[in-house]
Length: 424
Ligand code: ATP
Ligand code: MG
Image (tube, rainbow, N blue to C red):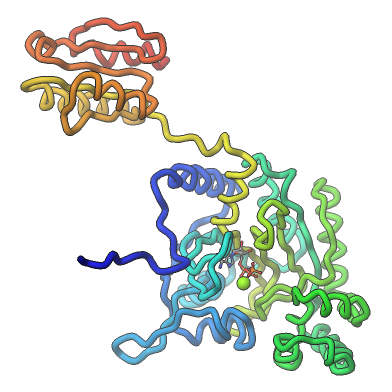
């Protein structure tokens, strides 16, 4: 017996029962992006490992333990991208996209992180990411949030996702705050779990993200970043809040929101849903004004976010099943008896020439009339066309309206005209 080879744990197949929903979502989401003037950028899935080390930061969950890293045959260390921002910035610098111009970009595709697979958390997952370069004001932060809010409205899930925002200040203000935070944590080191102790010096902001209830209880008494903010980032944040209020977008300020990656400054935000349990963040991002320079470009302000498509699909399946209907075809073409299959293939091609949008399935693999008509029903076809030996001999076709049951026999040359009437 040969042993089956299965997919890698946490890397899922997209099965036909689900791909229709994925396609519909992708089409709705990218249409909205087009409407805001955003362009797609297509990026490699593999990059040099040091791109991610430098962009994301050595002391982050992603770089410390989640990356799929390997040596290629030259001995170069390569990594399957765990996120899209680093590659997007790399490409922008490499192709001069940031030189004296602004860019509004999006990308979509698989990302890879070695995590414990569970609902909403996989090792290969998909993100739709959006990044804007060259604009430093709060107006563009607000635009990104308005764009995401429009997505939720389009998908009828706006009641079930909530916006949380925060400002984490300039890099300098944050450094000042971190000194004070570390001093506080040192005084309460007995309450900290091992993970927090490890992070305390290497990436203290991440301690604020801890899910440990004892640590969370302690943090109620910790000094707050808001007390150490610089004037400019405070003004930026106030302006963003005003834009959101005036646009009627409800939000909650979450002072604990720090985000996992090193490169953020000023605005950070997340869209969270309660309908997914622990994996509730479907979309997260913020401003990263120093990253382009950090990766070797000139100083270019930037802001962006990434959405986890698997999580969005789970929310949509739970809340808006109407979007999840099977694709329905227009016409099923039944062929019975000698010579009919060839005529059917030709008739189908003529109809596709005339109606490029027509969804037509030609029966394949033979079968009785009963079997073929059952297949037509399974496809949800509106109309069945039938070619039997008689029809082939007389160059006719039977047109059967599968909703009303009415049927008629016509010359094959009249098929298109009749279909046009039925579908008008
Ligand atoms: P989390 O706190 O859930 O681990 P994160 O902060 O690591 O999320 P980001 O790096 O901000 O996530 O990625 C943006 C979005 O991508 C997340 O909000 C989520 O929707 C999605 N995402 C991240 N990691 C995974 C994963 N392993 N599986 C599925 N989706 C993911
Ligand atoms: Mg994570």
